[in-house]
Length: 139
Image (tube, rainbow, N blue to C red; front, side, top):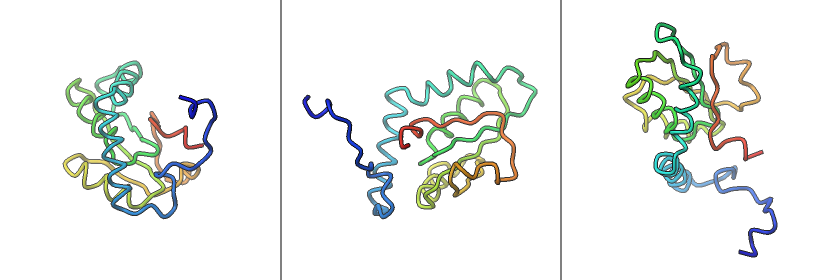
């Protein structure tokens, strides 16, 4: 494991400006698989359980760097099964990722934004909770 001793500063395939759509979609599918089967989604919903305490309140939740929308799908499923009211939003800088997310979550009411996280204050929406699972390491 010598290769792990030195940090790589190369961009991930997902961060490339010109990633082919087919490769992007495959990468998003793989991330969704990892989130579902290795616990990424569960970490998010376990965290939400500490903040969503009033079942009469409507919580506005945004997932920054939402990719395929799989985390939003998990939040939706969890909130329905636990009796919480949520309004969900997804934000991603890649329009292709948002297009994929819309297809991936077509049966769930989610508002999506194609935007950089740096411009979140310009969206004319307010959010109670922001998640960013598997996002921050890109910086």
